[in-house]
Length: 114
Image 1 (cartoon, rainbow, N blue to C red):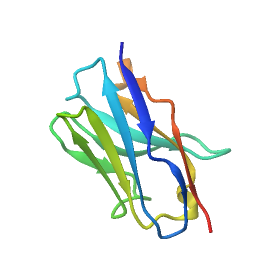
Image 2: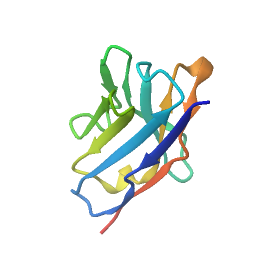
Image 3: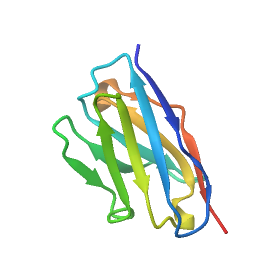
Image 4: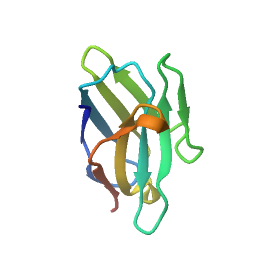
């Protein structure tokens, strides 16, 4: 059974940085993985993705500010978030696997506010 456990969320001032982690167990780690976020009253939004070959992709709203990476030895996915803006405030969820058989983490709250 796949388990994904996120950590690293919190409160940060605008312009600050946070690094989210997603520790995975129970699955081959070299599959497509990524991060979604959901703000109150809004649809869930794909933020960043990394495929089995390591190719990455980003939402336009976070390009140049966020970096997705993974440590295969540690079975951990990361999301480095820099130059954070209030509109980045949301619950961030990591996922593993294709849409037909996807596992999700429980989510971690990121709040960007002064």
